[in-house]
Image (cartoon, rainbow, N blue to C red; front, side):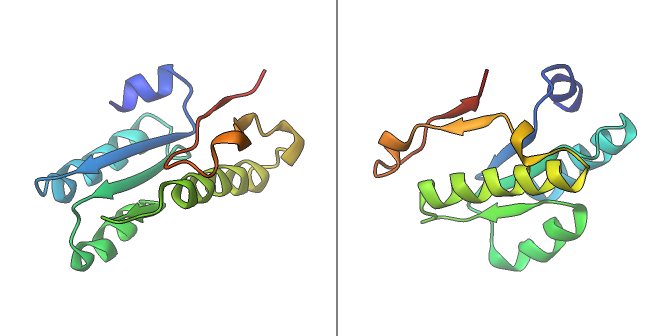
Length: 117
């Protein structure tokens, strides 16, 4: 997964866990990203993750955790802000931020987001 993410030039990898795979797969992914020189790719996690596991995931480098009942538009905005902060923190201007969201869908249960031109 790390190599695919690097080749696709992604800003964020989202992992959904339903069967406790987060305890082993997330740290393995984080290590693979670091090994490949892509530790700047944000990783977010969601799904059925017990709150007692949050600290270990955060210690492994997970940028955000979205549990059951998370409001999707709020989570999407949170992820976009994490990406914006990471880019600006790396010396890129906020105007170079290339993600966009369709405001017409903000009241729906999701936001359609993609890369701008």
